[in-house]
Amino acid sequence: MDIQMKRGLLDVCVLAAIKEEDSYGYQIIKDVRPFIEISESTLYPILRRLEAAELLTVRTAEHNGRLRKYYHITQAGLGRIEDFKNEWKEIMSIYKFVTKGDADNE
Image (cartoon, rainbow, N blue to C red; front, side, top):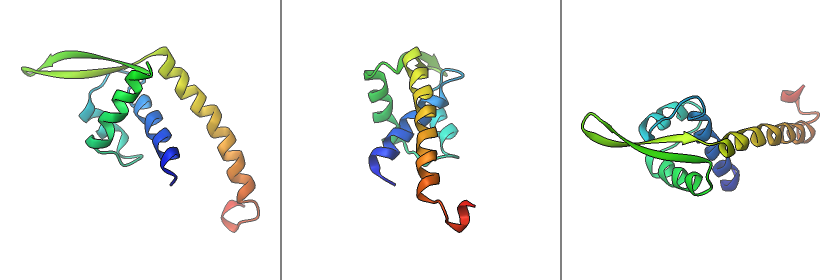
């Protein structure tokens, strides 16, 4: 898969993982992994990039005596998910055109 496309997909997957409720790094990895492979070394730069783009915010809270960062999606982050959904419709349309006539597309 093209690296830029995968990067965009990972960004949206991370945003989707925190769409319903705030979450922390390890939980985000667990939530995303069934759909796309992601490691800690991949996740944390994504989280920093999404925070810099103001698609999420970060708060620190104590959990079992340790500080844990919780990530919260912003309105801009929710908008990015909606943009992705619209873009995906166009990608699927292109896919159908490219695979037109293929046996597995009929």
